[in-house]
Image (cartoon, rainbow, N blue to C red):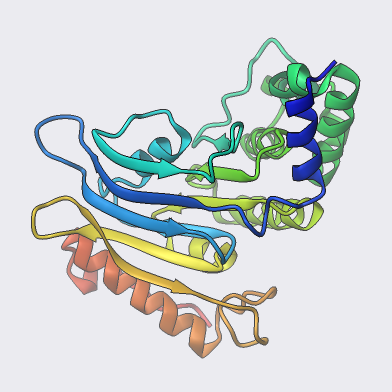
Length: 282
């Protein structure tokens, strides 16, 4: 039997009662792996617009920040608050990280069996496998699935765990463009099926434009630590807006947004513009 706290966690998440209020507040965060700080007195309020995409060049601290939010790393100073809730975060890694000796249903069920009980855990796992177009592979083992299917199973596993916040660490990076779009569409379907507060990191502006309602860019401050260089929210307001359901990549507003993001990445990476084209094929 799931204990009372687990039932409350499950009920609030399934009913969507955590999503609108879900937030992560970072205050005066300092962290580094050696004498040099990656983050120095860093603060960020992650709430409101959903999903949030954190963009930046390699080495800017994107994944480190996500791991700090997840509690996988501990800051030297400062606080990271997920509204004081336990079991508040589910994590999608860059690799699928499925257990090869368990089938896909067992992989998705494993993290939630103790929390929900086996019968309800399997029911919930099957629901998200269906939403991820993987129900026919429930009894298959990871070795029988393609890379995109394994990553969809990993994302389904994250959604199956009843947490108000899902952290995604560049989950599309190892896929070619058609598979990447399919996987991002799968995330959009999952958000419609059970809305969660999603914070994702990427180095690709188009991923941020395609899914993000708020885009944050990390760069470097004068002392070499990470700092926010771009932070804007986008509402769905019509067919020509970058955050609309269609994600019209050839609209003027989307092209302008991509140019701004690429220019920010160029500045952060110190890459000359001619080496980082941003034009969209019409």
